Image: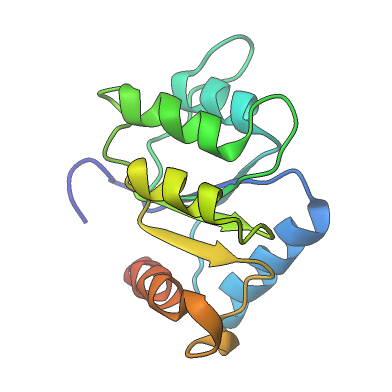
Length: 147
């Protein structure tokens, strides 16, 4: 781990509670026991990362798992803000979405995402469909967080 990430953690930015539970279950199944910090939308995530308003500032996460379709500030809008901020421009961000729109995928690539996962998230689906490379790179990054 680099000095930027003293304690491994994952920031999950997701508005659907079922998807949050799905991610928690998959992490447990893979024996990845790091703190999972949950934000309901992009604005909440920004407040947590920056310590704005009444939110205490969280430590910089090792990995951000980001849904695209959320109210208030969607995942791509949040990613644009993060990439423009010197403190967060190097965050390891994975997009998780039910959308397989090429425009979303291109926008995510332009914003230097580490991977693009089509939900539901499951490590059992590697090699199936078009997200195997991204899914595999997410898996390798998560394995680095194993305790």
